[in-house]
Length: 174
Image (tube, rainbow, N blue to C red; front, side, top):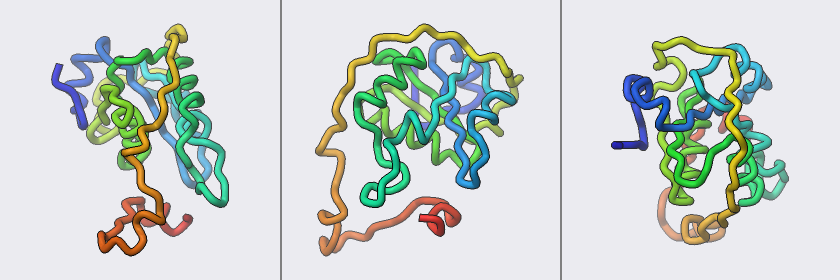
């Protein structure tokens, strides 16, 4: 199966039974991603909360969405029935940045993951309000690989450019 980093809606429609689809809608303006999921999502999609499942609590030092502990992330995946090695397709409805967060978190751990190219708007099929009942699975916590991270101190003065790829709105709000 050819997979990721981006997959088309056509590919996903043909492989819905081969992957776990994850809705990660989240909004800076305070709207509820869960309410958006409940009002209609891709068939078979589970919902993971950017704040509760894909992030640790915000702090002044670590920012708004620091990475969750490996235990917290593993527990969220386990609750959603996502076993190790399960291919995951993430989507959102806001340009893909939230879906890309889950994609990166899984890929950095060596897990198969992709983002739905074009997000929810690319899906031509029906949406559903039904929440799938995948049974929880065992999911060991795996540490974030230290060699995939640098600190702000590591970046200062090393001569390499640093780019902030957040949307203008997100950049303006810290």
